[in-house]
Length: 413
Image 1 (cartoon, rainbow, N blue to C red):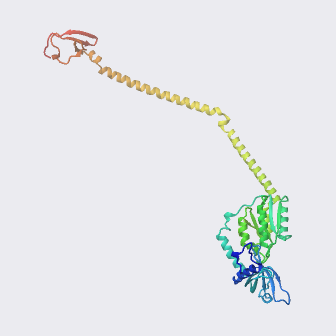
Image 2 (cartoon, rainbow, N blue to C red):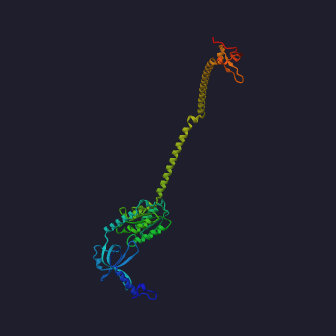
Image 3 (cartoon, rainbow, N blue to C red):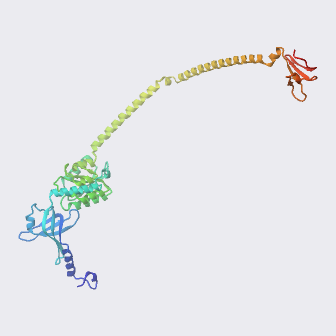
């Protein structure tokens, strides 16, 4: 038999060979457990086979399933389209038609308790990754140019958001994307709508809106793929899912949680009447504050004008002039006293010096005898030994000077 390794354009594999090999490969997979959402059930009376379509809630993928009608009829929980189930079965490839199908031998409905437990596990995972971090929340624009709205067609949530927003700000513009908000096609549709609005540069904020419902109805808004898409979006997103008690994971990942769709419209679109009233109040308060400031400054200026220094500016100069004149008088007086005191001291010293000076001594009958030495200044005669006979002497008395020559030496008596 020719194999895939040896097949060529000249020696191709026949269809039966490829189909048989595919069937063999799939058969080796064995029995598997599969989880998904039922999107279609076909049970015909009198037939031995029921047909189902099992869809992945987070992706546009589905799988054909066959089973015994008894599995559906005897299920403890009624199986309906949109129900989450877990199947156990074996994949088969039908070579005649070239189709793949899962033959289920056991079907288990996923209960609400298990769904809530899965949501809690996913909540913990996303929180650990930081998707709920308040620091990642983007602020909403004060007055968005265009508001994106993702909701079901002709739903109460759509009517509430549009009517409330237009009543608050009539000029507001919306880009509405209608998509299923529950069931197997909800998550892919919401993802597509969210991507379109996030890529639109005119859209400043996006609202995800849905009315209340059961846990199963709100499951799409706790889907991991949707939560990650909200986190990756560059446009601020408001989650308005269900009522106040409802808390899908999208509420925690979104930039802002609104209790209801009506509350979302109030959070995103400002109230024109309230804003006008606020502007009027601010204008009134600012005018009152300005008048108060002007009055306060006018009173301060008036008080300055009535101060003596401003009423008669030269009075301060006159006072200073008088103070300076008085200080000059005091300084002049003190200087005169000091000069007089010092003059008296000088006179006393002059008198003492006069009394002790050489002129006074000479006047009392004393004289100064100097020896005349040729070629040098006269020297005071201190001893008789310095005056040999014939020595020329210079004698200074009170009224003049006389010259003399020594005749000899005699005793002091």
